[in-house]
Amino acid sequence: MSTRRKYKTYKELSFTDDFLFCNIMQNNPDICKELVELLLDRKVGKVAYSETQKSIDLALDQKGVRLDVYFEDDLSTAYNIEMQTSNTGNLPKRSRYYQGTVDLNMISSGAEYDELKTSYIIFINTFDLFGKGFPKYTFENVCQESSDLHLDDGAIKVFINAKSTIPDMSPELQGFLRYLCGDNPNTPLTNRIQNEVVKSRNNVRWERVYMLLEDKFKAYFAEGRAEGRIDTILEMFESGYLPLEVVLKETGTATEAELQAFVEERKKAEDCPMQNN
Image 1 (tube, rainbow, N blue to C red):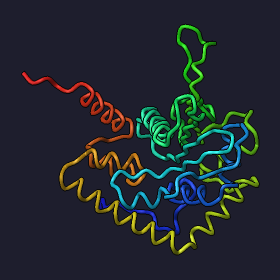
Image 2 (cartoon, rainbow, N blue to C red):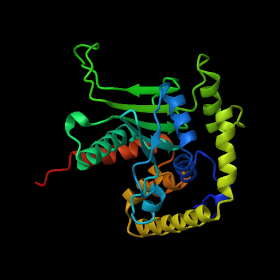
Image 3 (cartoon, rainbow, N blue to C red):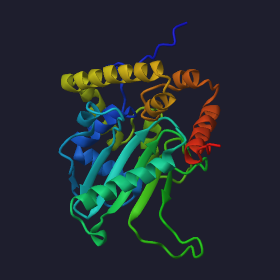
Image 4 (cartoon, one colour):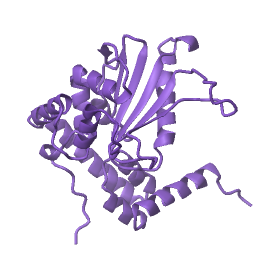
């Protein structure tokens, strides 16, 4: 039986595939704004995409591909959003890295420390990362010795759980989460998103870019596999471009739980390298 990677064709892509997610969010600021307001339950100002080069275009020129959406609003807030369909076991650490990248970009643009904008790092997950059943997990820095003492550094990290079924969420949020899980759209927002998905599948230019990315990933996987670079394979899995069954085979693990344990062991080995005798 062939174990060759079966990539989705462009016509098979859905909103949970980060290529379409990124393009739709970046080309429809009204949808982007409404969706973030729904997820955060807070007002979002006028959307301004401060990066002139799109993430998709950047992905064609680098190996470590990260397809996400970054924008700022006119209420002095920055947002970084990523769709995640695979539990790679490192999302908390990735959120820390993304937070640092957002802050560094602001400082590099000339901002003083007290001018750093409030920032939200948002992962829209199709799984329950923390296993508590909440539709949303929000993290801010709080003093361990006094829980009512907040650092107020303006750094907020949010993890969405599309699998949540708690009964007291709004119909709009419930409809969006069910849509992510494969249900038909049944709210005004999900209907608009699905209309954009259908339109996007007929966008010839986007299809060509997707095919270029697909070829790039195939070559990157083949290169990493030939050189025995497990890190390359794990990186592609984290980016959503290798299915679980392929990664299990390449790493010699049998289940997703074993794979996560394997990844954790590699991280520990990197953090605590063996001392030479």
